[in-house]
Image (tube, rainbow, N blue to C red; front, side):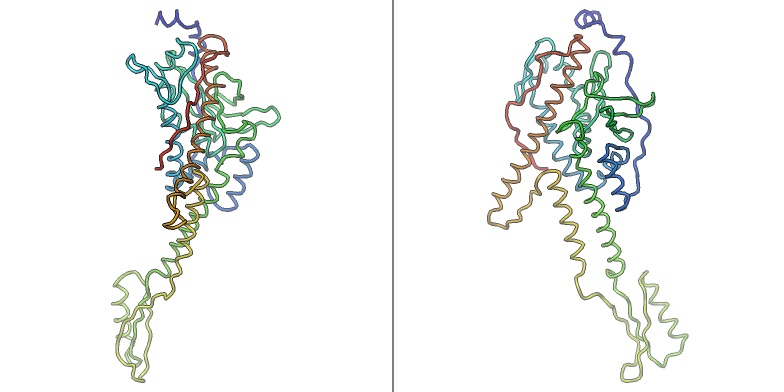
Length: 372
């Protein structure tokens, strides 16, 4: 510890002040077309309380979660595996390089896994994709910096003062890009960056998917199970008719309709099934398939399906992969820019007392993405 104090500035008192804590945030809100319109309208005005919780609910859709994980995993894999790192005294050269002061490079490498953990990077990217930006607190634990992603369920944008305001257990807190204890990340300019959040489009697909599944289930309840038509002789006594109908009703929970048959050559007992003749469920299936394609295009820029048939399918897949690669490359560049302009200068300020440094991350080549 004495060597650390000699090596780094005496800022233990500042770092020991601790981090802020969030209040409990609910995880369920009602969803209807009217509710959705109100939530998205508030989001566009810079009120993220309900849209942040809605983005959590979107993850309950397996297809949204799968597409999102595909995009995020590609970004994180290339980010974490692309820097010059020190592992057991050996430097591993990958697709990125850290250029700058040697001692601080060693410092970053020594605390690399703690600073750039998979959980933190995943939450930062997920919030950024859904809501258009992400907010993270830079906390210190025994001289080791950590990124603590912040849930935006109690955050809003103050247009008059041009700052974000969030509620903590200690009260309301103003947060700006220059705050040394916070990091604001976005693929665009921070002001009104929330308008680029995919929650505005994915929420509609999510609701339509729920409605299509619900209507398909209702349709199956009514039309999927055939009705039993119990044919009864017209001359039978009421007690025999009741006994016959009751015995059929116990076969299962489906309805039984008794039908009397007259004496014109139709005497006798019989049982038939009445089934729908048309395949009316195609509309629901096609609707859900279209929603799945729309979700994939919104998140990944393509659907990775060969709609062109056998001919040209390879070329179509190549174009789709190029599109996904461009999106991942854009996410990587935005993340590196945020770390260069905010995270590293703020860490160096805590360690050296100055925000100016030539320490930075650089992207050396375009990443090769993987589907799935």
